[in-house]
Figure (tube, rainbow, N blue to C red):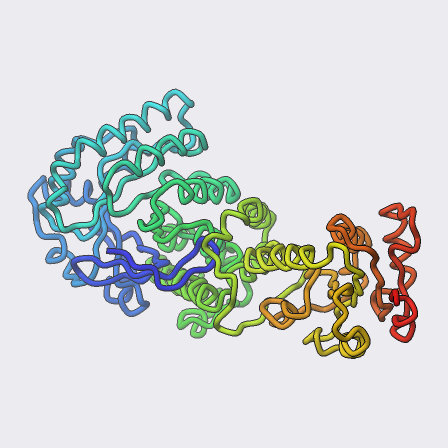
Length: 519
């Protein structure tokens, strides 16, 4: 049913099998209006959207309860997902059908992916009301099982409780007891409208930590490109939204980093077919229906491009670097990025420790090192280095030129110490910590791009690394003076650590090494 092909952080490129073909995740379902769809379904298909979502409850009302085959009605041979009417429950407080009626209807119209009739918690419910909604959704999830157990459709169980994290945890624990094909995180619309991206990322990563990793997670109502990469990294696989048309009706123009009104634009910063052909003024002078159609088309192009950008980042193992870059576009995105940093150790489980594609790790700031692919290797390298020093004299070479084990300092010291077992050589780097010569030629210590500057050299960081060597039982440390590790920096580290024995940790030039080593 679902196969993971490539992973990076909590994101993955996956293959979801349905009765009308495969969807490659991450995937966004455009919301399609059963009565007045703009742009056409043919245009959606041309843009690469081989699936859409529509509302089974509205389809039910339009057909007065008559179960018409939904693919035939839409003249669509690809994937169709249907919501059950939960959005109408959220907005209007209820619908005129019960859970059994709408679930049975979704079976009869033969939708590919279907949702039970849940009770969305939204953001206006009190804690007590939200708890009741979670319990009622769970009751309906159990209730629906006998009706759907023999179905070859994919069934979605909505995990409610937002914005109350502990209720979402409760709902996720309940959800994993039920044999649904897809789990969904519900009711994020208001959080998105208020730019509460950090809260939404927190909820998605929380659900992902609890729900079965073999099952996809759908995040309802997410259709802005600026938050999609962060939610994919948190564990989201599927999304849906009508934002492309709703924004267009309001004259709003989507960008990867935000939204602008076309009346505020002199130029279109995009080269899609719409933006390449028209200017903002020309769109403003068009009849409203034409302007809305073209703006919606542009918005779909941006969404499709963003999904592809995220997939390529996953493929290259660069999703963290994409987030790091995008997080600077808006304060709310930086807050969302901080949430992912908080869960970096959890994300390590899903991140490969090596980079088989051969792509170098890009290091811009110390934030880059929170990247699980970096942090897990740095921590391991430090542990290896610490395990080698007990009872031995350590020659510490500041790393400045890759590959570090071909630096002139290392080659000379290696010849000097020969087979001595009481001396060990380590490298020290402002970003990458401590390395043995063997580790220095592996990922990411060799495969990275970083520029050493005065800002990247933190005396406290250097002092902490030296302290790790001392605490591991080294007899002495001799630091080789280089361009970035000067005697001035050495004095700063001594001050921070408060060395009482000046002979135990010393610094000298390469030519003085032989005289500093014990005979």
